[in-house]
Length: 423
Image 1 (cartoon, rainbow, N blue to C red):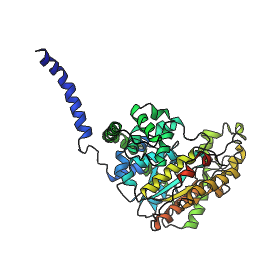
Image 2 (cartoon, rainbow, N blue to C red; image 1 turned 120 degrees about the vertical axis):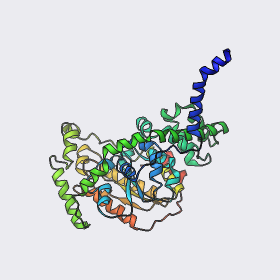
Image 3 (cartoon, helix red, strand yellow; image 1 turned 90 degrees about the vertical axis):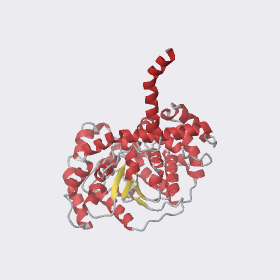
Image 4 (cartoon, rainbow, N blue to C red; image 1 turned 60 degrees about the vertical axis):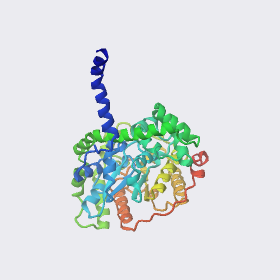
């Protein structure tokens, strides 16, 4: 009698556990099927953090080979008529830009983003926008790591990590430096093994595979919340409104004139040609206190160089054809705040050496455009003219036949402390 009573009391709990097991581990599809409209809304909403660290939306989106991943950071949110989302919605193309990145994302966060959907990212054309500002002496912050690298993405990487691969060993050591990964006992145990070049233990591997599946199923259940956010933001609708200012027929010299005209109307209330709204909101009340405040800043010594190398390993493994775009800065502003332009030119040379020496030769380097009026819209993000030139470079890249070279990775050099600290 007593045992029957206990069974009756435990039955609901056991049933719940059984349902959870069936839901998350049996091979049944619980993912919502997103419409083409919803996927287009995701593509135009780079600030969707749930999408960035999740799985379901990007897994479905990049099953479509006509979506062009454009990876970067905060510049992707600075939309005007010449921004890729607006530009390519107006002028016919075979592809739709899919924006990946927001303030705080950089090489390491993008490595895990790409690895989490590795099957969808193989043999693709990809645009990657490099910001010199990532390459600080500290590198990626703990806060940015916790915001933009999910435990699910780490599980997805652990499930395929090769302990004999120097890049995997580096990433394991790198992650051990972040509290956000070491507070999980399973992840920490796996990272310790990989950092020593040892295979993940059999029990840990089974648990990682189970955790990876659980993450994917869990994300599928909650991904409609992410879709609702992108619908409310309506980045695609805003981009199309901006694109209405473009001439019907693409005429590049005319577009350059119009881009300058657009900027002159929106960057005219301060001596640095910074966007009026940015100036009024962020800088106008404090700019006099910022004289020479960046005098000691350098982007030549940073752990970001090794993080960037780990990202290049992902591109090489996926056999991707990548166009790298290097953003310039606003010379008027940085001359005032003391940031060295010659240091930025040295940065350009250093990152270009790292790319070209390993076979990544498609580089659009805008560093020398720092003096070009209206190329930058504020202090260090593309303005109307900058986005136009970037969009035209992307357009040309997409017209060319894909080239999937055999990259010659030199991890011994570019994952080293000596390279990261070489001026």
